[in-house]
Image (cartoon, rainbow, N blue to C red; front, side, top):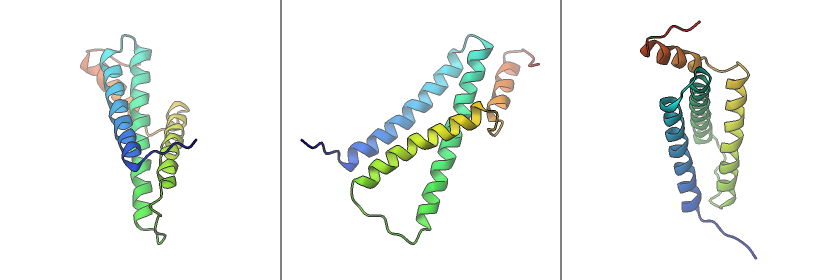
Length: 119
């Protein structure tokens, strides 16, 4: 028995996953009750931003590539697994302290808007 997924399914999966991730991070920032939850939500936001940056760099690199990608569905599977790989890279960067510093600045801004100072 073989299972076939068409390009539309994989494209919709990718778009839905991006929308869900953005919505999830936004609601986590708004709903954070503790400083730890707020900082974690900020780190998730930074991780998401780094993922998007890498995805766009990858698209640009492919646009300038001499190789023509085949139109078979296997490239869609590679793209899906590549997204997961980029997510792990971004998470590792942010949570190991090697991110871009966006999370900390966002956290400080949130706390300042709440009238609190950050140590």
